[in-house]
Length: 344
Image (tube, rainbow, N blue to C red; front, side, top):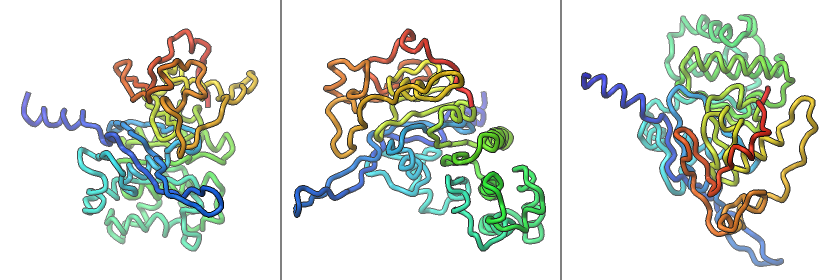
């Protein structure tokens, strides 16, 4: 084996993104009585560890307030961690963004509010041309052809280039946002609830498009969603978040078919299925991130909690070659035997 081959294999095995005990704390003001106020730290991320392999697709799943958006901002270098390190190809993300190393070109973002992310005064052609010019992707004479190619790739006719966002349907706007994101020839595509708010058929079409693009272009796809069906269809891996921590990671099908963490099981049971009644909501209230209980932060809502769960907060620990869960007592297979396949 040559030194070059060894170096290539080492690069392939190195995670594209790596979060090492990342914490992000915001200072908030709490009112105590009528006049007294004091500042207190709110941990949006608390000891997050995550590895994302090059070319994979991963879903970040959790309820509102779980820390998904903050984690995304840390990954993209838009927010610097209070503690810990966020790495891209082994280098600090914030340092790469500040140094102008091409990091911004490699990252592409599709926002939940796709229409709001597009300038309504610009035509579709102008919107897609902007990153082409900014990053010097092609010469001026080739821009029109490149725009037409990108529109075709996302399933839009060439004549859409002359329209404005207001003249497009919700599904067309999402496709334009995807085409604009792909214009810089990125290696990473980040999508934040990119199919929410659309009818089921349009969602299905966009999910098929995203899955095809990810495979054809070799993209690393990071997808934020609260929909387990979407995660199951689109992403190979999943990371489930609860109150600023990742509580379970692993292959999506394995995690959803046989969850190891009680919170993952609760989310799975709450997912609606055809011909089955919607289950009761998860009992108990989500603790305030400003006043977390001692021990495991999920213990107060967990049907499987034991005395040690209320004394110490479990770390994310590997319990199988490709599975990890932040639980002292990972669920046995008997506890999850009722879990069925998740359909989109």
